[in-house]
Image (cartoon, rainbow, N blue to C red):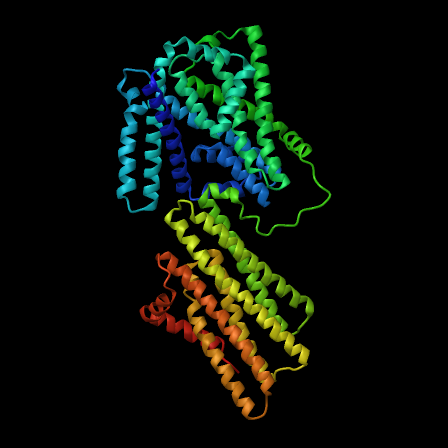
Length: 585
């Protein structure tokens, strides 16, 4: 092989790896995080977990990505360690799909139908369709499908280029002698593990082996140990992702490693013992791309069937390797924001939304506790309001940082809109918690001075607070459920609260003139109503933001104006209903 042949081979390898990368990204975007969400929820039965692990890996074309996702689930406390075992085993089965697809490159036939199955026949068609969708399709999903098709075409073109460049090596004794060395099972396993560890993809390393097999220089005696090693090498990605994670997350990565290591030892021992007695004649035959796919599949299916009944032993072995401390780690309320999920941006967005909903709940809880303190003050609940406000601040900081990291990835349009919406809304939820602290401090001042509002003032505030509780609860549900229809009900109620705010202040001025209320209590009431009214404003912002996200714009004030003008009949009807419901005594 001359220098030009070497460059062609390297170029083919680069195309192959790049094609696999963008095809996997396209598949992940198309799934929109739904597959990962299924993994998160439906792992109660081990058999179902194995099936789901296989299906998800077959779709996203990466057992490493699935396993890293599982490590993240365990680290976040979403999934228990024993639930993770089934998915890890299933991921090994799912990754064999890639080797079967790549085996199409080895088809040799004069039949027209069989020729159409060769990548050199259909890859150009996939490329034309894929690139056309990427350039001209308006729908994000169609563009993602185009990315998948183009990625697959690049992958298969790279595979074909690589195998053609390697064919001249079949006549070189030095090249063939290298693979004779790999007939030593231990050496073959080590080489396969190292190759896969370097490129961090068993699918890619198996594909490279299949390309080498197309030269006719690789026998099954050399290929089988390499395939076994590739299954061990793919564990490196998960082991790396376990660094800095919780003990259970590290154990999940170790379960993946032990599963492949023990499976390889059992398979190699049984296979070579049988060879002593049976003498497998096919070992000296040249391995084919399809033969590699068969061996890869048999090993992973057999290892799963063999070790599935002993899954608890794998868990115990991982727990024995990484033992518990006497000191328990502090519960991490932000565990859902695991950076491992950033490898699958659509799922990372979903986790960020769940965390934002938790933040909204903490903000709502702080406000309601603060309002209750205005009726009956106690230090314990006052401290709780401060704790919740600090927690909400922490949520805002962590979510903001995490969402900016997500934004660095290529996101589908819908996911990008969700990220933008969350970034806008978390500021409003944080401000609501700030107002909760202000209300709590006002309640504390009233208690300290041992003052109280008149019966009429208290009755008016009760109406105001009831309206405020409704708008805050409604806004929380709007955000948590992503309910644009419910969001349209927020603005009419916010208008009513604005009017309540003015009316309560006017009635207080009348009582002040009649000497029925003190100036001091007047300032306190003004502080309360101002905070109440501003909380309602933030609720309006959140609802408007969610609705505007649906139509791909975030001009909140413009939305409110349009709502009042374009749907005036409905707006006025709801406004009157809320006015009647929250009429001051």
